[in-house]
Amino acid sequence: MFQIHRSFRSASVLFLLIALSLSQIKIVAAKSPAKNQKRAAAAKRDPRGRRAELQRLAARRRAEAAHLAAIARQRAAERAAEEALRDHVQSLIKLDDVAGEDPEVRRVAVNALGRHAGTVVVMDPKTGRVYSVVNQQWGLREGVKPCSTIKLVTGLAGLNEKVIDSVNTTAISDSNRVDLTRALAYSKNEYFQQVGGQVGFNKMMSYAHQLGLGEKTGINTRDESAGRVPRLKSGFAVNHMSSHGDDFKVTALQLGTLISAMANGGKLITPFVPRTPQEEKRFTPKVRRVVDISADAFQHMVPGMIGSVSYGSGRKAGNSQEVIAGKTGTCIEQGAWIGLFTSYAPLNNPRLAVVVIGRGVDGRNHFPAAVAGRIYRDLGARFGAPGIERIAGNTESATDSTASDSKSLVVDDEEAEAVADEKATIAAQQKIMSPTTIWGDVRQPADSKVKRVVMPISNRIDPITKPAKAATEAKPLERPRRVASSRK
Image (cartoon, rainbow, N blue to C red; front, side):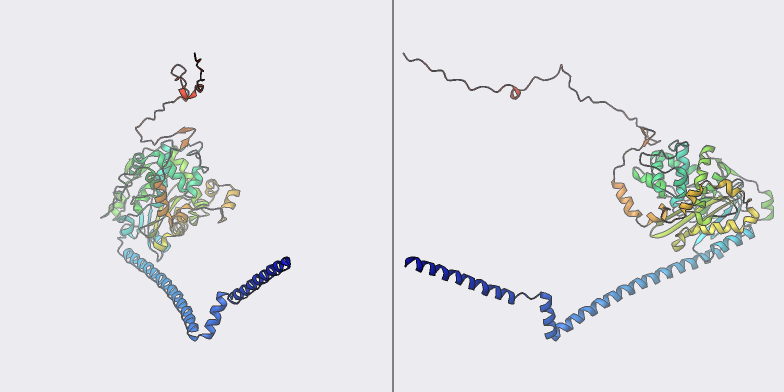
């Protein structure tokens, strides 16, 4: 009887627990609709909720419309600023003193520049005779950052200082796999940063001064600018300066005399505009100085400059009738684009040096190279060379030339890196630069006066001075045994 009562009590407790569990499940299930469904149902039941949702959507649309309107206003303001800059340039061109300029060259240069924000210099690279300067205010009196055209100075310095091995021009660092020709043609920043860092700041400034930067050209006109060169740089700032032209200011005429020195074999000539027939009759070339750069250094720069125009960053200047040697430059200065192109032609008998500088929108996409190309084409009948020279000057193989036409294979460091240049500069300056290796040895900057001393440190200990084993390394002491004393 007791067993039956006990079993009945256990069963009752079990049924009670099951009933409680089922009731809790029903309660939870009743309270578990999705929050979104609750909100949707509440919104249907509550007109105020529907109005609030509609207001949120309307506010979002208004914000998007305001953002698009702001973008449109910004673009309109930029277009207005560009047009104002172009109008300003046209007003400056009207103030040019054209006395003594060659009328045909002047007409061609003005037409090539068109209604764009820029300046053009056309001169004879052998005599210094200036045929025309379009927008003389910018070309003679206002300096700009040279951007990648400074690589001409860096390349010549590297070759003359033997930082660039003329036999193996790829050997500037362990990581470099680009030769000088390709580095010039595609304006490779890293290559010239390595070269400039190894040449050193003092030597770089020496070559810049030799090639006429930081001083007036001596042209017979008023208010010529001397430009500017950096005063002092160290560390990675030297590297970056050597590829981007940081803290330099150059005029188009200074670049014209620099490229003329490369064309005529190293003579830095004084540019001259014969204002009268008598001056033109008495005109004789005046050499300011002969730069201390070997003829081989100039020759090793030529293939890369031809490559720039034939298949590289300056290919918009390409001319099927003659070989043009040139160098592009593109960067941002104080928030505005600057584009440069400095060149000479024909290759075997240079008769023209053409420099074009553009600003704003007209400094992008290598527009200056396109202007120079039109000038060479339009003056080809008078100053050009036979088309057969084109074959001799083409240094890129057919395979490479075909491949280089693909945008996916052409890497133009100038414009691709300009937008992020400031961030890259800050990051690079924070990085500690280690010495690069050339021909298996650590190479110091050419202007370094500190001799490197290596003191070998042996990792072996002389057995004579070898200390004895510490007590802790000795055999552990044994616990002394207790000796039983004999009682008498």
